[in-house]
Image (tube, rainbow over all chains, first blue to last red; front, side, top):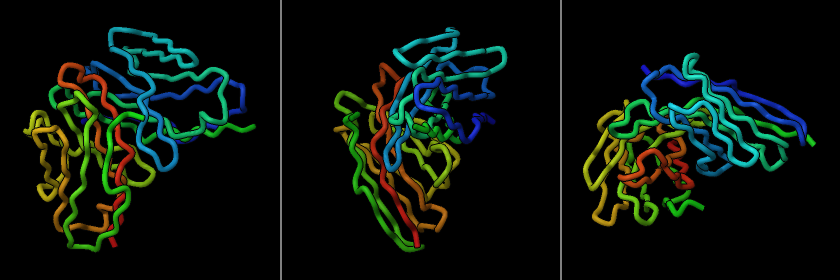
Length: 112
Length: 113
């Protein structure tokens, strides 16, 4: 079945860049997503990329997609303490019914 | 703030009881999806409702059921609660014409004792 994997933890210094990686298995995925979850809160959609693109930039966020290797990454430039959260990678594995498959989440800690 | 609201925010039940969770979708959205997020894990898709009908279901038993109303708000019902049902339950709404984006509510945290 569909599977999304992420490393569980990442720690960076304030002002550095963070790179969060994700691998997925469903080659038919049409969209891939990054969501952010702060403690005690729901999921906030950060950005998404259509599968025929290989890069998308949105202010401090850059998404890179390597469809051949089924690898997705999220780069956060100039990471701030407010970026500390859990970041989830997700794919639509079945476009009928929008079955989102989420990874386990990467906990980003930003050190002052 | 996504405009998706859920109630209640927290709930404590005992094993064997039944629970109903509610979700109001963002204005203009006619599709609601429900997810279960166990502690330390990513959300797992339960089911989706589109225009009051179930439109896809994940790997959850029939004791998880739902409804969508004419105003597109939705309920998730769980019967015969088990300890493992303790989780954050998230609903997400989207528009039938923009199905690639889902906006999540803050969730209902359910504890089953």
